[in-house]
Amino acid sequence: MRILLVLKRFEFGGAENHVCDLANALSELNHDVFLVTANGRQVSRLNLNVKFIPCRFRDIILPFNVIQLYWIVKKYNIDIIHAHQRLSILASCILRKFVDIPVVVTVHGRTRLDLKSKFTQSTSDKIIFVSNHVLNVSACYHEIKEKSTVIPNGVEVISLVKGERPYSITYVSRIDRNHSKVILVIIQKVIPMLIKKFPDITFNLIGEGNCLNLIRKESLRINNEYGKEICKVFGYQTDVKEFFLNSSLILGVGRVSLEALACGVPVLSINQKRLGSIISTANYADYKENNFVAIGNEPPNADEIYTILNDFFNEKEKYCTEAKEIQGLVKHDFSLKNIACQIVNLYAEAINYNRKSS
Image (tube, rainbow, N blue to C red):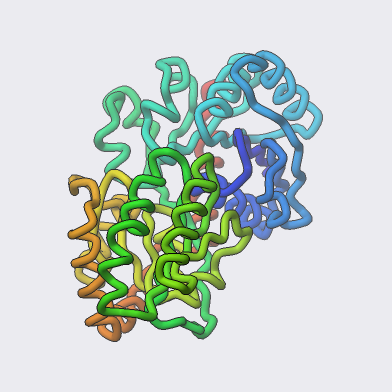
């Protein structure tokens, strides 16, 4: 099968990581994979057999983007188009009106963002959601439910031995205006409370965004205040697995949580909108259905974050044992090869349906 993956950007992020892993997995299944996206740092992670075609998607040059895609699908005789993120989904759906090639789209966030228009909702042939919750609460649920399916992100399970540094917390996230709010709460309020009880505590931050300099300055301030390096800001990292294996606890949601659990490392589900709990064998099934987001919970505050982290370090051995059990569940539920095969089956279904309808 000749598969065209279309994505707006290819830097750090849940959708980008997923597409990179999916492209590699599809290539390893002996499919011809073509990836059209902006030139970004994820390119270095692609298998050599994946053909990367740089393309900058912008609203102002959308007609030109559609022409580029048209040229690509004709030149490489593409069988299926799989689009991710709003603008690349829109461009692919416009192209669908001019070519007899099915378009599959994946909704990584909300339908009101990724499938913003009635046009993209109606034109796409198949829609993949990464969690049941996002599909079920979609404002256009009734219009798209017949062609929608839930296929979670796949992940590679790591069997390496942890080299954990005690009392090491790692937060992986985009560092933009919204996400930086909870990061500042942790640096300014939570860490000073934790350090009184756990003097060896360290807080590692991985990610990039327009608030990275602000976070660096605040980290430097607290490090100077305590006379040691408590907060470490690493910025963008191509591979975060080594950081996960060296950490006691990972903070994050979605793709970050999944990759950390695949490494056998405990996870606290947290972002700027919702504070969850440590993911355990008791709540794993619920978190799995919701892309490891604490649906319905309130935004985080300093006291509640401190309470959870304090409990974690007091009961760390228990949580670490459970994390190893969860790693086995993740291997069963999110095997990258199995997820890629599910997506290939969906491609085949879309292609066959399109042939019958033509």
